Length: 194
Image 1 (tube, rainbow, N blue to C red):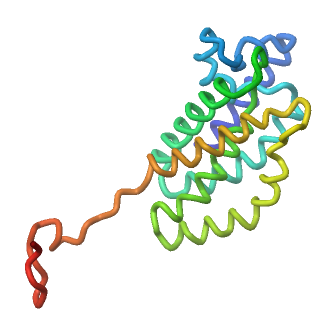
Image 2 (cartoon, helix red, strand yellow):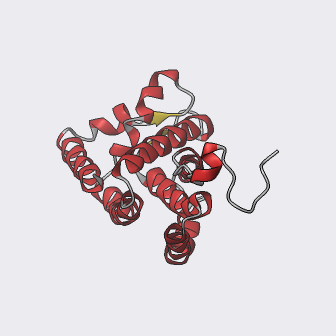
């Protein structure tokens, strides 16, 4: 599934390059322009150039692969939440009239999702993944936020982080209740629940 997402990004990049970068303006999020709200769904697929795409491809692949391992269905839903929440954040916070494109917000969303998934789901394997992601990517992500860097949408990166947090809370694994508690029975030797 993650490989399919990357394949779509490369196909869009080839089409964008072949059309003189026409997709860059047409598919980007224009801050507070109601006509570009639909572009929340297209902007992560469009990049300024091949270097922009290559900068997103490796972390998108590695973080996406780790996020997809437990459940491809959850991964897909989590990706949609990250794209929508991150896109709304860009639309609301980017400087007026700017066009924001690229999958870096999704990368930041995957990062924060994986950091929080262990805490939210409280499964030992996910806690270990959260710790590993924090160690492996923490300083890189902090330095890549890009506040004050010309041409970098720090609003997109921060919005993606928020999207990952929302996704971790929304797309969580439901905790199973013990059988005795779920059926209303009490366990031997324990007083009945009041």
